Amino acid sequence: MHRIWQGLLAGAAGSTALNIVTYLDMVYRARPPSQTPEQSAGRLADRLHLNLGSEQAAANRRSGLGPLLGYAAGLGAAALYAAIAPRHLGRPLATGSLAVLAMLASDAPMTLLGVTDPRRWSAADWATDIVPHIAYGAVTAATLRALAPA
Image (cartoon, rainbow, N blue to C red; front, side, top):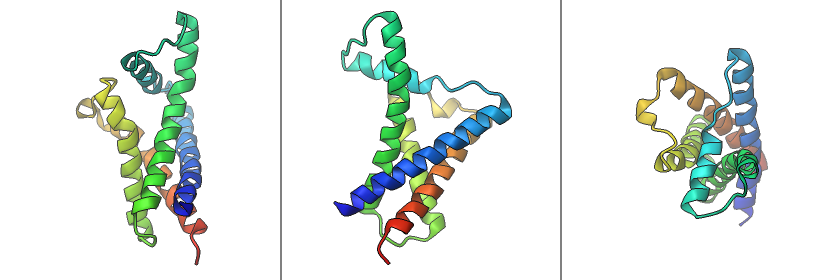
């Protein structure tokens, strides 16, 4: 159980890194924020038959739920990794494993909900997704290493 808590802490650090890299990309390229988190929240609420309220209230709730889904993916991916991965993988393997796990945790639900289709992504779309997830993987792996007993 202790290792899962370490994973949650590391996932929080990694999720922060992912968000920072994403926001820096938005600033650098002057690109708008992705609408996929909000769309995912809306589709998930629809599938679960959840009433998010009036049109304005539902839009506001989707705006809050979208990022929360992202944090759940980041925390969950790191907790799962911490629970099942060998403790002392090399940094590149740990970083890559965590990046892929986080991408699956975020992109698979969006794909299953019909919000996106990675088969139709451009190279720029893939870079926009991969680079922040590599930052997530690197920071999460480093944090897990720092939290592990010597």
